[in-house]
Image 1 (cartoon, protein in one colour):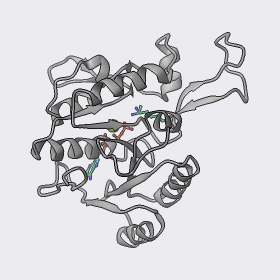
Image 2 (image 1 turned 180 degrees about the vertical axis):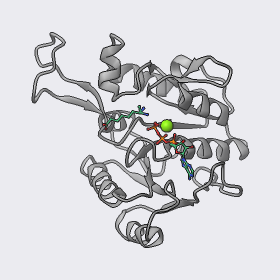
Image 3 (image 1 turned 90 degrees about the vertical axis):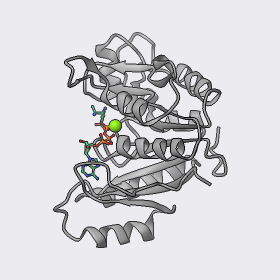
Image 4 (image 1 turned 45 degrees about the vertical axis):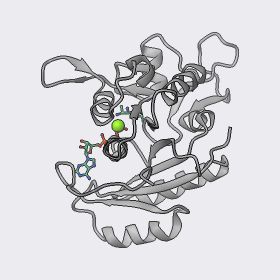
Length: 242
Ligand SMILES: Nc1ncnc2c1ncn2[C@@H]1O[C@H](COP(=O)(O)OP(=O)(O)OP(=O)(O)O)[C@@H](O)[C@H]1O
Ligand SMILES: C[C@H](N)[C@H](N)CCCCCC(=O)O
Ligand SMILES: [Mg+2]
């Protein structure tokens, strides 16, 4: 399936890496849609890493963040079909949990959420080509070099929705951003826009880096998120509101 830029009922939020602000941006998109009176729900198809919560319980932090930002109380099994305990690459976390990640349940869950909400914000795991399952060729469970790999990009293709790229502004992000944009384009997917997230307050020449990316990422800059320890006041992504 190919994505259609004109259909923004759902977007897939990808990042230049893990820890670059995908959850922050996904939550902002959800809040913006909810504040505009839309039914908004988040989805984290694959979460790897269960975090201790302030009340002592254990939960996938990203899933809680998305649930708090949206306004649709969807079945957690749809919001987060794979909740894997270990903070590892999903293909490893799944195997350690005795599971294998496949696309069919993820596509089905996404479709079910679309039936319950006006906007579905999907947060990817890690970077765009994050491994979800390492093919095992003969099916015996042992990885085989060269066997087809299932990645986050395959999930994006299967969902067929436009992408929003979060670039965590730090040294190295230019290479990561260009590689990601190229991988998106190579698959015929649509980059609806990108977000510059100032995760490193000490980054040298941050504005020059941002200007470079503005010239070379083939999509509109949706927001320039300042470094802040809490949600920046007044930052209201306009995507979805029109
Ligand atoms: N603009 C910012 N200013 C300050 N801290 C930020 C900013 N953006 C993100 N952070 C912090 O950086 C960390 C990583 O952000 P976040 O969890 O949104 O990344 P992610 O891309 O969703 O990571 P993951 O791959 O684990 O899902 C968090 O602790 C978050 O609070
Ligand atoms: C555990 C982490 N916070 C994410 N959930 C998963 C990141 C996977 C990165 C895999 C890789 O590209 O090396
Ligand atoms: Mg996250």
